[in-house]
Length: 146
Image 1 (cartoon, rainbow, N blue to C red):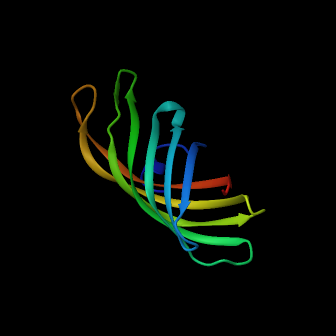
Image 2 (tube, rainbow, N blue to C red):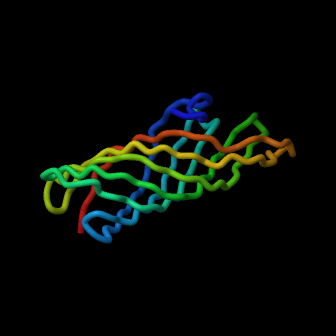
Image 3 (cartoon, rainbow, N blue to C red):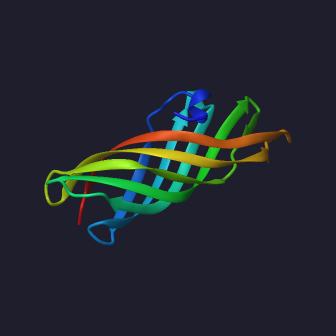
């Protein structure tokens, strides 16, 4: 979903994610991610940081919200010999839910809306192009608590 989804196909990407639980209700989130779309026409690397707020605890189910800022490095392949890869700033927010399988292992899902702040940048041929936009990511994750 979002402006970028209108131009590029969906794809499975990867993300390394870390949450430092400051308390039972709040945590610090950080992640590094990468995804490639439309047979290499578009790819994006992300470095995000933000806050996680646990909404409540239902037995072993923990619904939460995340909000944060980050850097996005989209790579656009405009033609065979023309590309651009600016570093942009943006924000992300969305809900998620974790299921604690044991005291150490959990499984979950998150739906995150990303707004990459748009700007105008020069491509490799010297043409001005609009970059940025919005997209939504869906993350299935499994992890370890320590």
